[in-house]
Image 1 (cartoon, helix red, strand yellow):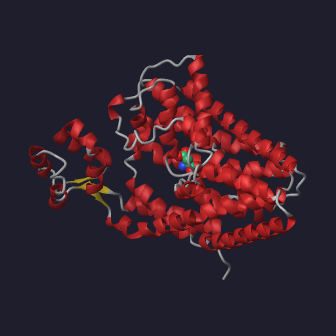
Image 2 (cartoon, helix red, strand yellow):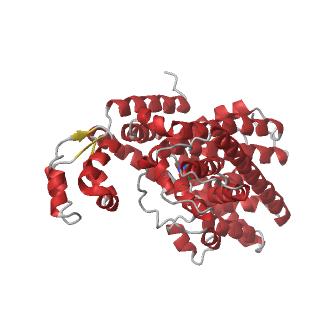
Amino acid sequence: MKKIPLHWQILIALVLAIIFGLIFKTNYKLDSMTSESFKTEVESDVLDGLKSIENQSYPTQQAYRQAIVGITGEQTFKKNQSLFIKAAYHNPAVEAIHWIGEIFLKALRMIIIPLVMSSLISGVVSIGSGTNLGRLGFKTMFYYITTSLLAIITGLFFVNLIRPGVGADLNFSEVVDGLEVSQSSFKSILLDIVPSNIFKALTDSNMLAIIFFSLLFGYFITKVAEKYRKALEKAFNAIFEVIMKMTEFIILFTPLGVFALVAKVVADQDDLISLASRLGLYMLVVLLGLFIHFFISLPLIVRYLGKANPYKHLKNMATPLLTAFSTSSSAAAMPLTMDAVENKSGVSQKITNFTIPLGTTVNMDGTALYECVAVIFIAQAYGIDLSIGQQMIVILTSLLASIGAAAVPMAGLVMMTIILSAVGLPMEGIGLILAVDRILDMFRTSTNVWSDTCGAVVIAKSEGEKLQI
Ligand code: ASP
């Protein structure tokens, strides 16, 4: 029997996951055991109030939230939000399969750091001289910054044209957990690029620091005596080859992982139709901007700068793009991205190893566009007019936020706190867009990965490489 190509398997898994998620929707229900467990967190009269909704099933988080707020009051609810929501989460069908997705994600995450290090080090060593490295580094950074700016400007155009925030209902603002923790500044992000302890950077998955160390390490391998250089070059190439073999093995499980992950996202998603009535325009602007950047701007760049066929390239990238979409993590998709860029579109190992790990961490066009649209949406919703100067700050900080954002789910949302404080907008604004962030994350992550792969093509071409597209 002819084997179904992997990207078709993933697509089928996606469709099945959507059907599964729609059939087994998550609901929210407190039972006597769980409400008892709040004893230490809430007053006894609130606890009595909670008894009145025991065993009542709420079809959406929003409905459950409203019921609880009615009993506990806004303050108590906000304080214990995640506890209340976790305790009432009810979806046995999704819980039965979710572990598959967790294991799949863990397996991908397991190989990310060794892959980033070995590929960057062997990439830099094979680039060879400092001049070549400088030229490639410059071109790569230039591509990342220009495409991210282009994405931001696309978003800025639509958010100013459609003005989705005007008249938005501020009553629906949700509390975002862990917002205080995330309020690191750009300054600290920049300072953290140089790690004081590389092992700590590794255990914290501080990717910018790991990249910095790997680039430096690779560069100085080329500066040591030949016998050491050869030994290290061989060793890192060998590690890289082994990790790629592990990647190929993990890739085989992608359809299963995608099924489990997406089924949960669909099942947990609050009623999109009702959300659409208040956040529909905002979603439309983000998706429209991403669509234009994904299907028009980047393909034009591949066509005219990369002198390659963008649609053939897109087809080759189906597996990493669908994985990025399903996991909402460019880092999780990275092993698959490297595999596809090199083995399907024919970019050399040298350029792939240099550009993809770097791009995964630094180049996030989708996130950049989303940051800009979301921040301006929040300003519009609060009726705050941003001056041209403030809009310029939004552009610049969106770019920095996209560079600093980790390649993991919802990292963009966390970075937004920094932009909001830079232009003096209320932090609570994030609560307005929280309900649809998980869905939008899927689209912006795919755009992030797509841009990385287009960058690899453009840079390979500029280095005179012959591609398969
Ligand atoms: N999830 C995105 C990524 O991994 C980052 C973001 O939240 O925007 O690329």
